[in-house]
Image (cartoon, rainbow, N blue to C red):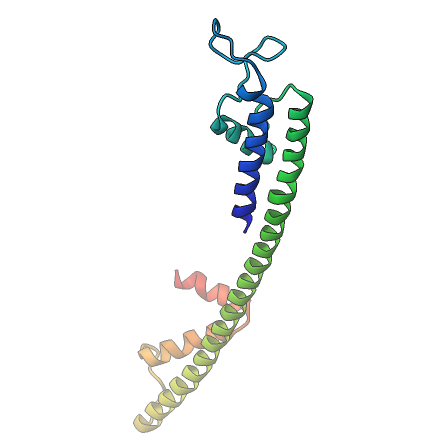
Length: 179
């Protein structure tokens, strides 16, 4: 819909500007081979395609200054085209940008919720894994009838899990020695 409004404005404003500032408005000079304006300069609006370029530059409020109207009717058309470009382009783009920002924030919030959910699941798995290792280590100790071997991999994993579940200061200390 936005593209349709821009295209319609482009065609109408370019045609009006061509008729009031281009060749139909001025007399062709055979010697100079151009359409001079009353001030002596040639009109830059010699084709509808050049007036379309002017229309795009004016509607987007860039305004390079390479093409400009000199007649009062042409200046009125330019003013209307500029304000219409603000209404047709700027306002919808602002709304589209605000909606994009809202959707982006919602997406980031959902990602954060999913990340927190995964961390909770991992913490639950560690707790379950810790109980499993404690049961296995206890059953191994009971079956053998002696104290656990500190080099046993199950005991090492059990100690690591307990260290990770400990307060943060202990984890730093263990990580330092683990490096």
